[in-house]
Length: 230
Image (cartoon, one colour):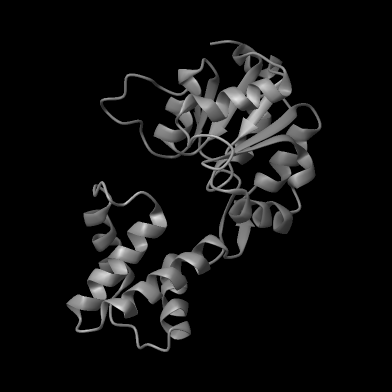
């Protein structure tokens, strides 16, 4: 393992690494029912179970598609028109994607400390229209020298393209960078595939069949400054 403290650039993920939605999925679902003028007729548990059945469907290409199809199926199951489910799924997706966010514990301070010593970049799996309002709400957009909206500017993580673009825009090679994220597949495997050392932000164990492991694992972004000697 290289000396992580000597890296020039720290590249971060956004959702569940720096911030999280300040409303639970259940709260968003209840608001969607209210906005559609409906009494709630399924629970968040039923919604998530329905989503699991559609996640392997080749015709479902986005999370929004999955939410919509799940709501349609649940609407029909409970005797409602499919169109009711369509509207409910679209309202839920909008409220979830554009809902308010808040810093995870300690991440605001950690970002400030890191920005004093490193160039910071961001790679996030969503289009700019969804993620930029989060950055502005948290007032952290100026901290990042480069932002790659994967799925909009490039292919989604874990495809190599967003990582390669972040390196190119900063004019550094993979050995000069450190990548920090919470998703094992998208973040750890994606960054490792292009030779970037990784910090996995998770309290879980790596998959038992994983052939690649993170360079280091921490429980939260708040632990990163001390790890790097900041």
